[in-house]
Amino acid sequence: MNQFADHPAPHEPSLRQRINRRLFSSGRSSLVSIVVLSEIIGAFPLCVIFAISLQAEGALTANLALVLVLMASAGFGVAGVLFWATFAEPLRKRIESKRNPTHANDSRA
Image (cartoon, rainbow, N blue to C red):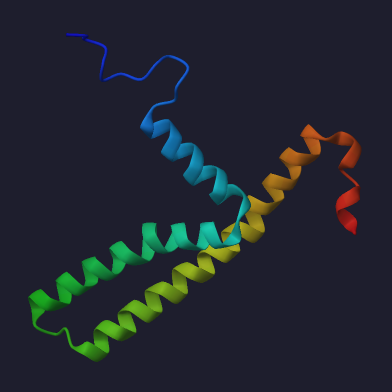
C-alpha cells in the first residue's frame, strides 16, 4: 500500500490551492464576482443570524424576512460595487501596468 496515494504529485496544486486560485483570480478582475462574494460572505450570514434571532423572539414574519433579505442584499451589493471601484479595479490596473509598462497608457481609449 502506498502511503502517499492521497497526496497530489509535487507539481500538481492541491484542491485548496486550485479553489483559492480560481475564486480569487476571478474576484480580482470581475465586478460580478466581487458582488457575488460580498453577498455570500456578508449578506447570507447576516440574514441567517437575524432570522434566527427574530424567530427566537417570535417576531419573524414573512414581510420582515423579505425586508431583511432585500436590505442585506442591497447593502452588501452596494458595498461590493464600492470595493471593486475603489480598491480592486485600481489595483488590477496598477498590477497590469507594472507587468506591461509599454501598454500602460493604452487604457485611455
